[in-house]
Amino acid sequence: MRDVQDIGQLVKMLQNSKTRPEQELTIIEPVIQRAMASGIQDMNYLDKITYPLYDLVLSGVGQELYDEYLAYVEIFNP
Image (tube, rainbow, N blue to C red; front, side):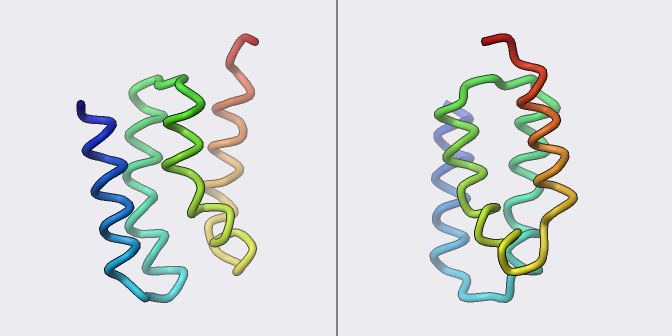
């Protein structure tokens, strides 16, 4: 249930905020960090919470978090 709340809150915050990429990163980073710290390996969930991160990286912010996320998913066994 927590995962659904996180996704819902994340979507709501991003929709309500027409902000700069740096501000968007401060919204999504804690959600991604919490997922990684919890050891979540549900790729559907991870894809949903990291989707906004791809646009941020393209805009020049979030590369460090993106690299950390990639290193995290690389440890999953197929």
